[in-house]
Length: 79
Length: 79
Image (tube, rainbow over all chains, first blue to last red; front, top):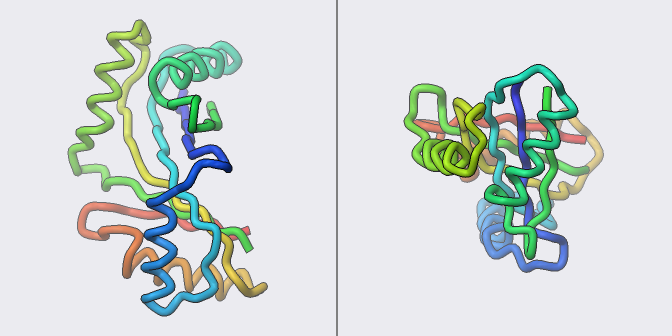
């Protein structure tokens, strides 16, 4: 199975990388860009065929390693 | 409109961050993980209401700033 995890900073946390990209895009002539947020995407193959069990396993990986849940939130997709 | 850009290293390019995560997950007791790839996700609001024009604009942003097209590929979603 293929799992995809998206990790973003929580809404209240200042996203300096997003702010830098926003400024750079404005400077390059894209003034309509606003509220830029930058996150990580982690994709991997996962052994097994039970989608519900796989999702639980991926959530455990997020809690233990992939996301810093103090400042980051995550979304899990398993397909 | 909300745009989402996903930037990944191209298939032939060694993903050291992915390798590190793979090793760490194996060490934490998740042996079924394989082929880990790590990418960036950039989400932002975009002025305008024409989806096709917005997608072209976002692709131009990718070519000029968001992706290094020598080693990275990107996917654009506009909604």
